[in-house]
Image 1 (tube, rainbow, N blue to C red):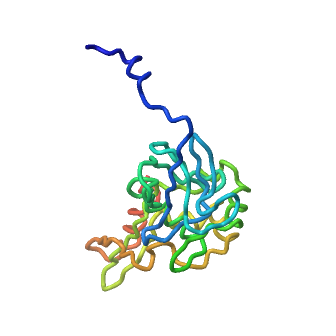
Image 2 (cartoon, rainbow, N blue to C red):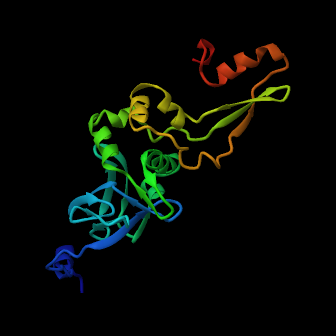
Length: 220
């Protein structure tokens, strides 16, 4: 017999108490990621913390199937569905964004062989720039370095746009304030994409480089 949608809904099992699932935020190497703020429709917290105390296991609690948003103070890292127990940093965004999310966290974190920690200092610095920090640091930029072939055996490596943004503006100020001294995630392993940047006239090398990277009026 036909059962109305409302009748079906009334027959659904509805638990009297909210059942929370424990998940774990990890990086690409499986290390626990701690100190990242997370928000769900049922509550909020910091990964790796329990009742305000650092546990260091990257854990978080959520209702199964809920959307989980992650960030550092007001800076939005990304979000994912709570439908698995292990959540990778790169799951918080697609393509470049996922890689850049992990790169950003690694850039400002303290780490050891088993764990990654976003310290109170990072949160404190980010909190100085509420909301505007989301415009100052873009997670959607290309993270691919380019190796330009200048001819005669000479090459020039141009940083990807994601890394380059930390060389100016508010992103640079934050970078300096946090004293970033280590390589960004994967930087030591990343091979730059190769592009031949010369034409038949060797004197046009620099012009070609500038044209490729929008450094002259000709690029506009």
